[in-house]
Length: 557
Image (cartoon, rainbow, N blue to C red):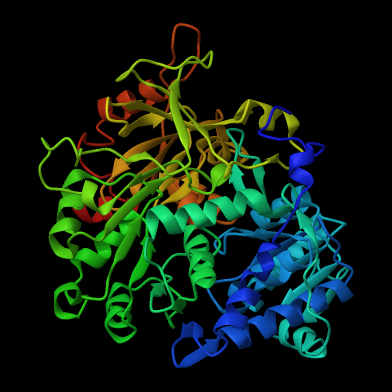
């Protein structure tokens, strides 16, 4: 597998810091500082460290070994926050799972990862049971509160998080020795076939990503700062929370457990928030909320956005309200978002200013090589469109158990990010499209093939296709076109309900149109461009306008 190093490379056998103990280091340096806040509860770094160490001892008692994957599926909470440090310090691999993943998706990840243990929020117990039923290797389920074991989960041993932790309150500090190449983190990202791929990060690659995030995205982060975690800790927000722990800053979780712009502005004022991470949808909800101008926001230093396209009009609104605190970055799960950065001083209202280029996602991050290449890996001239390749120490080791996919993504130290872009003479990068059909809705990745496969599983469906379309709120949204089997019937409502039990909500198409024929090329293929043209031809969508949801369409009619 071509990669940036191999496991037998003597340089990668050097012992390095186990990143699960970054919390230990901060707790030793500043034990009484608040590390986590949620509502009226505040936990010091010393308390968080004691909890994480006790959970680590509990995992060792359950038989978790170095290199084992441990799935964690919780909403933003103290157990989710602590789990990363508990898992990593045992030498095991922390695998955060999207809290919005369906039972089927959760079970698939359990199978692919071969995880022996899983920590879940009690409300997700049925998903854990589905994972146990699907994966014979999943032997232990840890729930955040007592729960009756759901059907299908009987084969595993079920434990209560706080009870397991309490039994191991006393004991030796856990700090399993690791080398630079040892895996510590695995992030799942679906492939073009819809099969999730586990991007494996080592202690070395994750450390570089964290330090790069602090240097380029959060300069000046220190113990006086506070991070408002409005996104899921299983995604980019979790990386920023890890940076906060390293620097002794506190992380603040909204007590509601969900994103609410009014609550966020109240916390910005009350907790003197300096930093937050958003996707453009969240950012604009914050900007447009009435409290944005009523609350004291003078503490804000870094308002980070990433994960989806942002329109120039929305970017201007955010700049007008927030001032020089906006930071955009771009990357992929395979390199922990370590590709480009658009610094605050690169945000400006003048489209003609060469240092504030409209539509750019920024320049290469510190310590990052970024190139636009053709299909033969040749560098393209300035301004030409090609694939983005990134060479950085933050690149993943590879995909778990997927050597062919790893070899395609990693070539001689370069990672193919999977997007098409051009680069100007100053090094600013402009995304123009995706080499794969994946799109992002609200910052979350959606792969049309996955949705298509599930639609096609409906007994009335003969053929299904999904295309992405621009959306002012979510960045992009999906629309499906479906042909039915002869003499079979199915309504949009029926098909939507069929998908709802199989896919996370953000993957559901905005509309599902049943058509009698699909446009095809001369070779009999159905192309995405032809499908978009067909949607316009049939007056199913209006160019330049958002696609209304089915219920909105009925109201408009």
